[in-house]
Length: 60
Image (cartoon, rainbow, N blue to C red):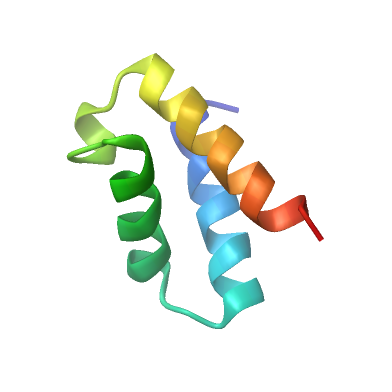
């Protein structure tokens, strides 16, 4: 699975968990890790966003 696909899956999972729109979660993650757009994100930025999402999902 590509990093973008993994990130997309985690964003969708967090959106369901928080009952928010996918776009709202995507924007929150982008702001948190400094990404302008997922399409232009570096591998490092994608990895950081996945780490952020994992933390948001599994910190319970």
